[in-house]
Amino acid sequence: MLKVVRVMELKLWLSFLLLQVSHCVQSPGGKWTANVPAVIPALQGSCVVIPCTYNYPKPKSKKILNRWKGFWKKGNKIMSTNLRKWKLPKEYKRRTKFLGNLKWHNCTMMLDGIRKTDVGPFYFRIEMPQYKSFSYINNTVSLLVMSEPDAPTVSAVVNNKVTASCSVSHSCPYIPPRFSWSRPGIVRKRSKKLNAWNWETVSTLTFQPLSTDFNKTLECTVLYSGGKQAKSSMILTI
Image (cartoon, rainbow, N blue to C red; front, side, top):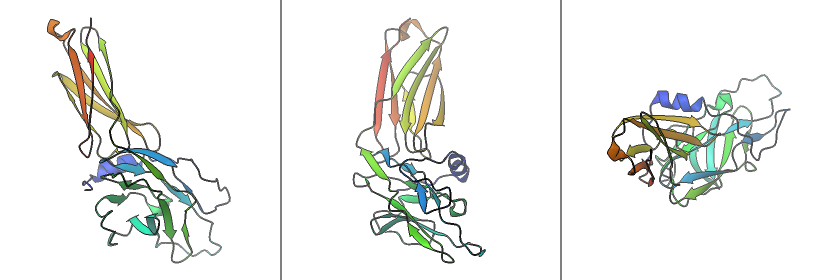
């Protein structure tokens, strides 16, 4: 079920959604084109943000366009829309959120609770009642649904203090993974964007080592949205 996301978090992550040119055709003159990734790896049970921007031919008239309707579709089935009162099919109800602002040519969408069947292909459709409508069926997005997450990357620097890091990449910036360590200490977490659809989250553990900490396993556990877990460990040495 789609989790409630704070408005400030949405604004923060939307500011990072840059134009991703994958399998679209450039349109300097203004044509019907959409910029989306062709394939996005996504973890089953978690969420994925599909970045999307679109373009359309400039209308010949000076009529102001102000009633945009945007739809994400799989075949003929609507899975997400900017129309709040639209009744979505049961399989997508409360699992999708239209994040983009159509006036800014942004059609970004989030899909939560990813299922094995959520492979796509998906495409965007724009409807402008005062102008025209268009389905971007040549610019589709498919998901590579992974049943299990990759193991996190663990490393450590040992000086007067031990600073250990545990990092993972993911497609769900609004519900980032949670980390836990096998040893107590000061824990900090940070995230950064790797590309238009992929983020990295890193947990850093800092502690004053005891003699009993060396030649002993230090383990990091990552819990993803949807309940999937992954672990990695290392042996601390002087």
